[in-house]
Image (cartoon, rainbow, N blue to C red):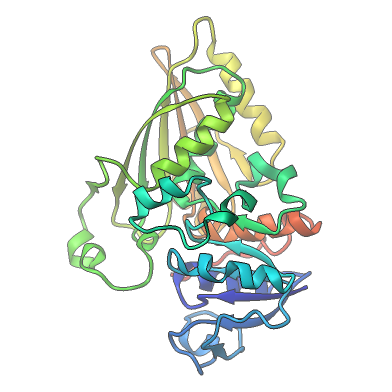
Length: 335
């Protein structure tokens, strides 16, 4: 199959290109983006072996699948045209993660460019939406924080084992802020320091609440606090869950064991995982703990792979009937 990557020199786009270039069922035919247009991808992205010339266009041409690693609203402006050519669109931005255009406007401060397409998008957390992805043409890859938070909470919520009042504390590496330089991610600003942000409400919270509600079959109250930590890549999310009356630690353990056993890229750890244990991989490492009657579930992922590009490739594999692991055995380690 012929694939194109739009936004191929950003952190997520370069991960997409690296994974697709070594996918046994994919021919990477186009890498697109304004930055470095006219240069070979391998000449401007460290570690890349993709020799394609970066094109200053967003036209898919003959591509059968388009990976859009673009700023918010840009993919939404082009999605209809891509779909009209018969291409499947796998969007890495937040443009199609929410089904409510009003919620998008509230959290992103902009009117949605294509609100009529929101109902057509399929949320691509494969472990929760595998069957829906099999015939999806517009695929919304979850945010990195929501990926970790949903994997931490969904098994217990789906089984009806916990109250729908959840606290999630999460830490992210600096690459989650993207490749463009900015003061908040300057080395001297973040090194040897950790801080919380978005305490009044992070934009990923809307996505989490929508999907947690789907898992629970009803409204869920969420307190979510993200933190920036001085590492390049990785997310560690810890969810605090209150078991329903009579629910035991053994029942929760069984729910997470079954969930991980049914999904190739989930690993159930005996102790809380470190982010370094999954760096560069599409794995999510999960630990289900217990403290004085409360479940404490920890999830570690690589924010650029399982939290972005790898998850997109995993969704591609499900959509087109490839082995779910295809193209995902290789570790992508830049940055």
